[in-house]
Amino acid sequence: MEWTPLASSSSKTQSPPLPPPPSSGVIMSPCGACKTLRRRCVNNCLLAPYFPPTDLFKFSIAHRVFGASNIMKLLQELPESQRADAVSSIVYESNARIKDPVYGCTGIIYQLHKEVTELQAELAKTQAQLVSMQCMQTMDTSQSQQQNPPYDNSGFSFDGSNVGLAWEHPWT
Ligand SMILES: [Zn+2]
Image (cartoon, rainbow, N blue to C red; front, top):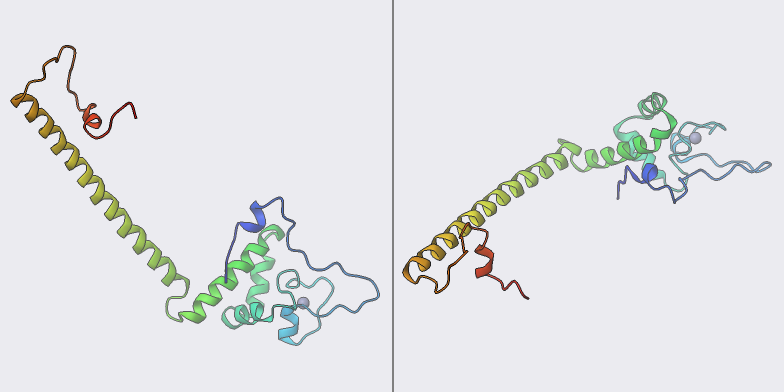
């Protein structure tokens, strides 16, 4: 199960998922929603573009959590350009709610928030260690300079920017 909410709006090279064009004289099979609800699918069925008859699970899971009338009400309140994304999020939320009846999507969001916080703390710790190592390096270099003064220090001023020279040759 993959939810790509931006796919329909951002990818301009790909053609948007459209229902198969109605061909005259052929009796249209009901959409996935109407098939699940065992009702007649009308020509301008609101749900047909988003619930194909080939994927009945998509509607049944959304119907189980949100209810068909709520889904239709939700879609009616949205401009047509946003309805596909709304259906994606409804289906995603429904799947999450079935898997985790207590937290649903919030469980996933909470887990990701926790991971972000932990990684930020780890990053701050590593950055602090790096600064402390750079400080130690600076102290070591200035101490060795005091003990063994360089044979030629004309024009040389140690301002910390030369720390990198101890680690790598500038010519390589
Ligand atoms: Zn329908």
